[in-house]
Image 1: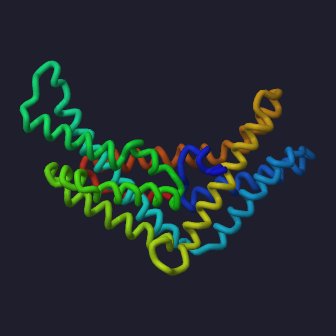
Image 2: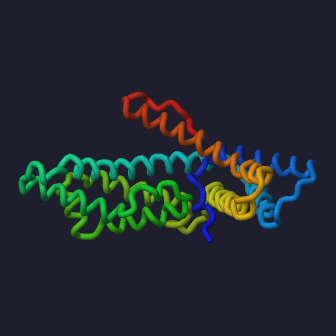
Image 3: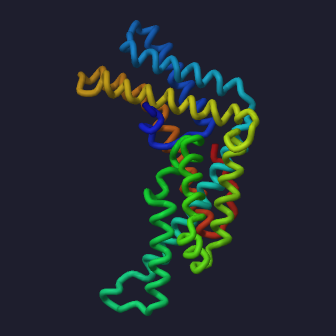
Length: 254
């Protein structure tokens, strides 16, 4: 089972360490209070602590991967928004009929978007390895003759080439597209998210629909991740707002 899929988003190395440290403190407090977790939940929380300790020992090379991930995410989201904008701006043919050129342009945008991003941009929240698989499929879809021709007619060849460049670098950084060791921080981050996803699953499975004390215990195990996810979401939104306003992005989102 892919437990990381149960998490709301991917965290940076620094935020993983913060959340994992809080889980470690929670385990220590429970031990002091003589409170026993269910075997599966206890094992999952111990795995989070172990993965956190591994991240603490690694050099902060993840920052480079994190920056690449953000740039790639912005590029793909921008391509999606550009295609969506064409479709929306040429909507309403039942009210005012489109010219043949307008209708053709709308069909091109719809074809490209539905082919390369059939499920939208949800893949941008996946762990690095899983996101690369989805993005590789996107690049392959862009090279289909009909799609490639539509991209050219839309004037989006440069954007398509940019996506391909970033995806190639993304795979190389992960050690997937070149015969070299994978980035240890990137792989450790995927393992950490998998461990925390398993903790979330077992916490819900073992403590949902229980009394108030057990529900509180469940929430205490899940809360560290959710708090960091919310902080990261706010920081990312602030950076997006700055870009829209034309302001320089001086934030350093972990």
